[in-house]
Length: 112
DNA sequence: CGAGTGACCGCAA
DNA sequence: ATTGCGGCCACTC
Image 1 (cartoon, chains in turn red, purple, green):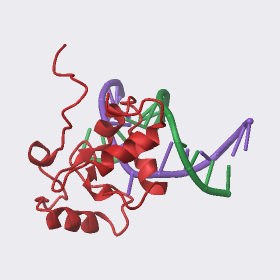
Image 2 (tube, helix red, strand yellow; image 1 turned 90 degrees about the vertical axis):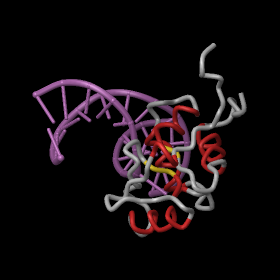
Image 3 (tube, chains in turn red, purple, green; image 1 turned 60 degrees about the vertical axis):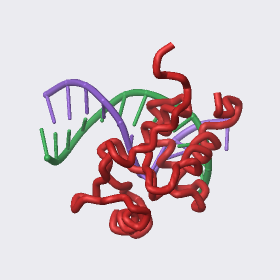
């Protein structure tokens, strides 16, 4: 396991968000799931709000590929950042998940 | 320490 | 399509 199981969810989330490569995006639910709590998607959002503002939260989107609601500046700002990284954002502020969804090759969940 | 809030997810009507 | 509800964990007041 690459993630420190002893640390709090917040720490893992921050590590994952910080590990999102350039031009890629992750979902709140996916991050939460990788942290061990697939239902704790809101916690991820919460961390984004009062967590490290240095992390690339603009690369974090919801399950629908849409942008966050409380993002500073609105979805426009987030969309601008993503486009700036080469991510195509639709008029509905949605990113192509099948293209930009970053899936860390870990947990050996492929099959046992 | 208790209560409230939060940038979400999924289902049901 | 929208609205409502429960759930999860952490942080702030």
